[in-house]
Amino acid sequence: MNKILTSTGFAVVMLLAACGSSSNSPDAIGKKWCELDKAVSQAQSEEEEEAASKKRDAYENEITEKYGEDEDFMDKVGEAVEACENEGY
Image (cartoon, rainbow, N blue to C red; front, top):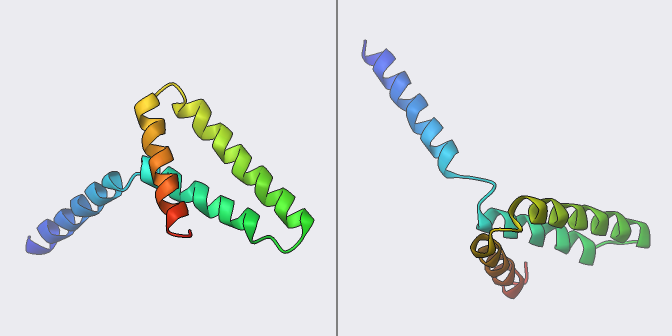
């Protein structure tokens, strides 16, 4: 019985942790954008730079489509981007 309760408790904790770490949070979006932007700046060739730039722009468009109307959310994304840019990525 204890094994069942322990296993169930562990599963609940894992589910709650997964729900709490959203990849759609302003911080996560800002971090991903910075990673994509870093790939552009670190490209070794023009082709790599163009491909990385397209990925970054596509992500930016996707986020703008999803959240562009939510000014507060987009402001928080902008703050997250500024924070990681100030850290030097």
